[in-house]
Length: 123
Image 1: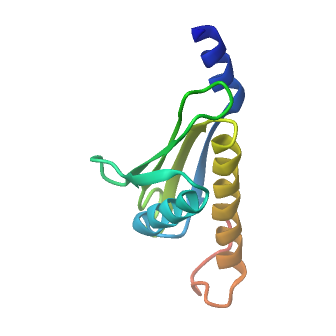
Image 2 (image 1 turned 180 degrees about the horizontal axis):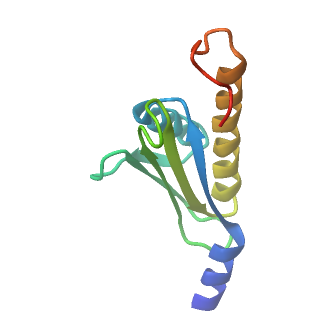
């Protein structure tokens, strides 16, 4: 039984790091709304800049979990490093969708006229 759980966790795992120009608080608020809209329980943990994601059974897993962590001012001011981890038949792809949303917002911010005049446009 444990082997099948481990195999499913490995098969459905999603883990990535992303860079965002949103503040850490904005990233976490976005993540909470994003996953609640998809039917997951989310909330802040006791650790700063960290949220949990819980879901019901998906596939052979009795429950699924994920987390989003945001570290502000990494490398230079205004840059947030976001760490995404999840596993589950639906939660893994949902986390991939959240990653894509962060990238979409980063690219949109890069090409918007409101971009900082001191920005070099390179990441």
